[in-house]
Image (cartoon, rainbow, N blue to C red; front, side, top):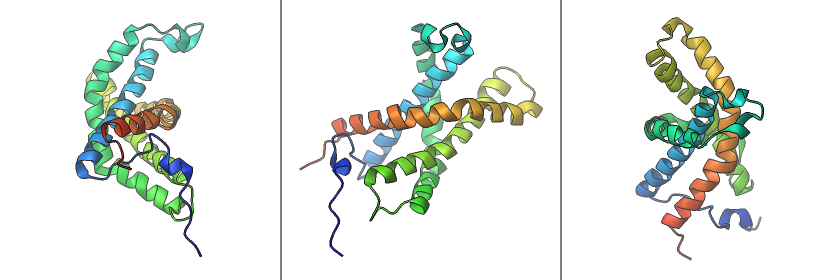
Length: 184
């Protein structure tokens, strides 16, 4: 069999991937904070009741962005640490189990890795957020943690998936490509 032509998607602008440890750390930090900020905007808007207004999230005001930025400043650290310790590894293992980089479209392989990572990171970060925001800061009884955690996962998983696929990952690849342009 002859060599397969590379997919045009693998060389499209903004699809650059890290090639060194330092690039990996920079990529991870950008992705961690992009995910944390998007999820905090969503959760702050819910906490402030915008989803319950007539018009829903369309009634959001600008202060949500500042409040989310404050929370994302420290939640991004949790995202970076947990994704570095197990989230990315499990996401890569999921993709390896369900894709073949030799024959599958590179974009499909990347999306499957993202899906596997979100499937691990959302429950992980939901547990951290449940402990921090509900048990520690809101003084909910620890015996309610399982229910709080399940409710948090149910609330966050759809947003985490779509935010990752359509906002955080494209933004991260774009910004990473600007910081580390590929040499032609």
